[in-house]
Length: 289
Ligand code: 13P
Image (cartoon, rainbow, N blue to C red; front, top):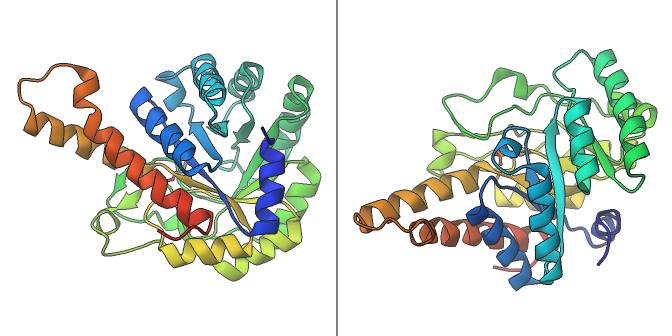
């Protein structure tokens, strides 16, 4: 199986991005893995610190290892990890990537903490990819009332170049137009997130690193395509899957009022999540759908 680093290099040549989907239960994990296997496309699964309270790092690593044994080209990411201790636990469990996220701190502190994290985590596993974050991209994959004001401040490419060089990170997560979560008008499809494409191109050129798009839910399809052309190599989607999980469960509860078997009640969530993951994977890999 190719490494995640190789997949990202290949993405730069082919102008594709790997889809990254969060999970916190077996239904979403199976839906993501099955979509990836059926399309023969690589995929990343990720767990935030909160999601890791539902699926422990060791359990997630075991699930990924079992899916790989079944032929799925799947990688495991520790999404938005705010402390070095939590990052070390993920590194020791065998994660492929860790997002060390000190972006809430003032620039100098983010810089220093990320330098320390790269040094310590690479001692545990030199092959581990470490993503650093610069700029505000929100914290919650939820349905929001308003777009947070801070998400309108985008990452400066010159500062990003300095940050990447000084920290030695492998991947950069900047603010380029998205934030975690969706406002209601996005859930109904009346509004979409839009990307600052020239900035993505500059960030890619100035840093020379793969760029990750966080907050992918609700982004206009054509913006995804142009963003990938400009340098996005990983695209994160979570809120859309959480909504699909909930709506699928609601449908099951309405249709099957006497059913109590969890695996039967989960079926509609599985189908809805898999549909979204399949569509996104095709879009990110330039496959018509
Ligand atoms: P969305 O929930 O907006 O898709 O963002 C997900 C994300 O970026 C997780 O890191």
